[in-house]
Amino acid sequence: MTAILLIAERDDRGDISQSTLQAITAANSLPDANVTVVVAGDVADAASTLAVNRVVMISAVSAADDGIFERVTDEVAALVSSTAPDVVILSKTDFGSVIGARLAFRIDAAFAADCIEISSPGDSVSVTRPVYGGSALAEYEIASSPAIVTLRAGAYEPNSDSGTPEVESFSSGASGEQRASVSDTIMEAREGIRLEDADFIVSGGRGLGGPEPFSILADLANVFGGAVGASRAACDAGWIDHSHQIGLTGKSVSPDIYMAVGISGASQHMAGCSSSRTIVAINKDGDSNIFKEARFGVVGDWEKVLPSFIATVRDLKA
Amino acid sequence: MTVRIVVLAKQVPDPETPPSQFRIDESTNSVIPPNGVPPVVNGFDLNAVEAALQLRDAGADVEITVLSVGSDFVMDAMKKPLAMGADRLVLVDDIGLDKLDSSATVKVLAAAIEKDGPFDLILGGRQASDWDQAHVTLGLAEVLGLPLVSLVQKLELNGDSISLQRVIPDGYQIVTAPIPSVMTITNELGEPRYPNLRGIMQASRKKPDVFTLADLGLSSEDLTPKLELKKLYVPESNRQVELIEGEDEADSGKKLALRLREEKLI
Image (cartoon, rainbow over all chains, first blue to last red; front, side, top):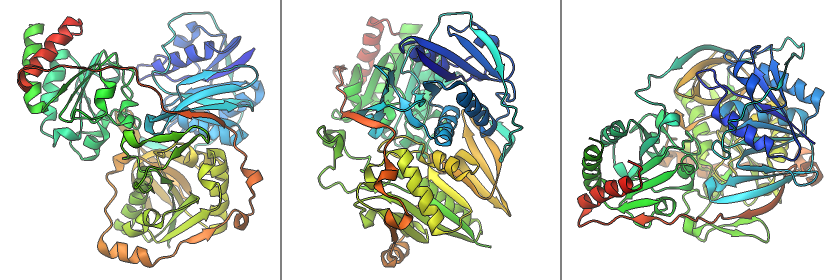
C-alpha cells in the first residue's frame, strides 16, 4: 500500500481547486493508493464527496486567515508525524511551496518541487521535474520516506469521480503562533474573465514594442470572450500589470486557443501555457522557439497580420 | 542602528542562452556550459539585491552582504551585486558545491550565516533559473527557525519590524514581520538597477570573503543528497507547426482565422 497525504487547496469560490483535483489523479495512480485529503477549516463540504479514502479537517486553521501559513504548517507537520505517510503531495502554488518546503526541512525529509510526474516502482518514489526553465527534464529517485512532492498545474487531468471518504477532524493541540501578521488584503480589480478560466487567451511579448498594442489584444480577447496574457518581459517593462503574466513565475493556463503575439517562446514562458489545446503564434522571426511549440503560425509583422485576423474572426462570429 | 541584510545569490548558466546551444552530457547528468556564454548571477536574486538597496534608498542604515555557495565562481558575474551597491560578498567556495541538492545547500548556507555573524534580514530571489526548485530560501527559514514571508514586492523598515507587500493571485497582502525574518523577493518589485561606472570601479577593488567547507565545520559526508538524480535529458518536441502563408501579411491574418474555423476552433 502507498499511504498518501494530499494537502488540499480551495479556489476563490471556496471549491476544491483544480490543482488539488489534479493531485488526486496523481495520488490515485500510485500502486495500491490509500489517499487522505487534508483540508484547512472545520467544514468538509466539497471535500466530503472526493474520490479518496479519507478526509481530515484541520479544525484549528481556517483557510482564509493564514497569510504566511505558519499554523497550517505546524498542524500538517503534526499530522505527518502521527500518520507516517509514504508520500505527501501538494500543489505547486505559493501555499503548497511554502508548506512543502517548511515541512520537508522540519522533519528532514526529501522534497521535490514542481513535478510533472510521480510514480512508485518498488519501494522508492520516482519523480520527473522540468529544469532549466523547461529546457530539460530531470528524473529523481527518492528512497527515504516520506517523499514530499509539489505538482505543477496541468500535469495531470483533474479527477472528476465522486466517493464517500471517511471524514475526520485533527488538531495537534498546540496553540500555535503566527509570527508575522496580515493586516490587510488588497484585491486588484479585474476586468472580465480570469485567465485561469478563459477558453481563449491572446498574449503579448517584447515584440509588441510598448504598452499601446495591448489594447488591440484586448479587442481580440473581447471578440472571443477571452482574456489577455503577457510574457514576463512585457510585464517587467511595465507595459501591462504583472497579474497578466503567463509562465513559470506567472500564471499557468490551459485555454482551447493560446495565441502568442510577439513572444519568442522561451521555455520559461511555455511552462505556463504548454498545456493549452492549440497554440497559435504570430512572430516576425521564423526561427524563434515559439514556432517549435505552436500548432499554427504566421511569420510576419503582427501590426499587419492582426487587424485582418480580428476582422475575419468578427465576420465569422457575426 | 545598522540593519544587517544577507542576500542569497547563485551563479547560474545564462538563461538567455539560445535553446539551440543548450546541451546535456547524459553520462554525467549535467549541462554542458555553452561556449563563450559566461555564467550570470541568477536574475531573481538580483531582485533581492534591488530590494535591499531600496531600503537604503529610503533612508535606512543597512549593510548588505551577498552570500553564495558554489564552485568555479566567475568574479565578473558574482561582483555584479557589489557594483549595484551591495557592501560585501561572501563566497563558500569548495569542490562540488555547485552540484549540491537543496537540502545540502541549505545546510551550507545556514552554517555560513552563523559563521559570518549576526544578521537582521535574509532575502532570496523567488527561484533560481537553473534547477527552478524555489525552496532554498524557504528551507533556510525553517532551519534557522525564523518567520518567512514569500513573494514580497515591497518592503519598508519600521524600527524593529518590517512592513511588506506580499503578492497573492490578483492582489497583495500587507504583512508585518518581526526582525529577524526571511523573505523571498519576486520580480514584481521591479527591474534591478544597472550598475553605474562608480559602482563598477568600487566593486572591482573589493575582495570577497571566502570560506571552505572545513572553515564551516562541514565535510562532504554532511551533504549527501536526499534526491538521487537518475536521468537528465532534453525532451523531444513532437509538435509540427503549420505555417499559414497568404499573398501578404494581412492576407495571412485572414487565412489564419479561416484555418482556425476549419478546425472548429472559432
